[in-house]
Length: 166
Image 1 (cartoon, one colour):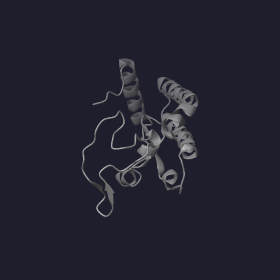
Image 2: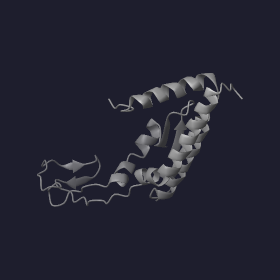
Image 3: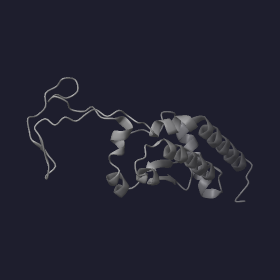
Image 4: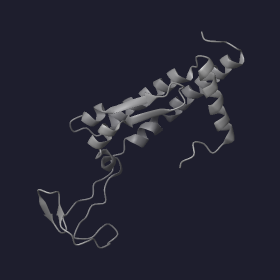
């Protein structure tokens, strides 16, 4: 199980912002939507396009409190349909000459997809990586962090002054 944060202060800040969201309008959710849209547009520019369907399947989701955002391929159907994007993002090792990468032996079993027979040792070339997820985050990191920090600051200031729903 992955931990959300390693700092206790961060957990306390998240709890405070979640409680503020329940009692008043916060500025964090619109700032998070704007940041997610910025990253989404960069992803759409960087993703390799053959037909453009994968770029069109990229979506964002921002929680109502504005504390969580998910950007990319969302949903079980799209994850199954665009499973190959992980191979595009990270590349593949390939199988040449009956050996795996690192000169390890393979099982001598037939390779088939049910209709086509590829032989015992098909020659599958290595594919280079074409990253688009991480670069889209790195390019926009400074802008996104500055916008979110400003939204958190405004929300906390508004809550400390006792301004209600406006």
